[in-house]
Image 1 (cartoon, rainbow, N blue to C red):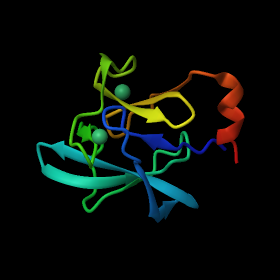
Image 2: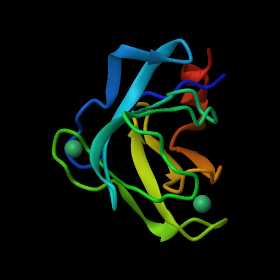
Image 3: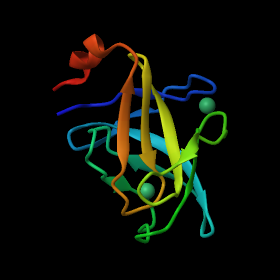
Image 4: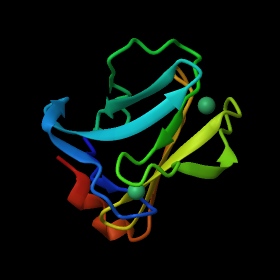
Length: 125
Ligand SMILES: [Zn+2]
Ligand SMILES: [Zn+2]
């Protein structure tokens, strides 16, 4: 499997949450806001897992704005989802490049843009 290690593309803050593991590896911690309020959530760092940990069940089809828990800036990608046109979220990979995924719960669109593909092996577990 591919395990992502990510940071904020704005302030460089480490987004990995070593205290809360999901799928057996440290999870990714993000701040979110939606029409139903603000909260922090955890995402599985396993690429393609789509596991989410949240204080509240996310409704399928709900779109949320994702932000950095440190600088609070939004993690937007300047393109809509090719599958459902919702906002895409972009996180910076420690090895260089980005992971992009759809903000709509239930949409499975995701993409990995690694700057140096020879470093992709570093993500394999
Ligand atoms: Zn930040
Ligand atoms: Zn989508």
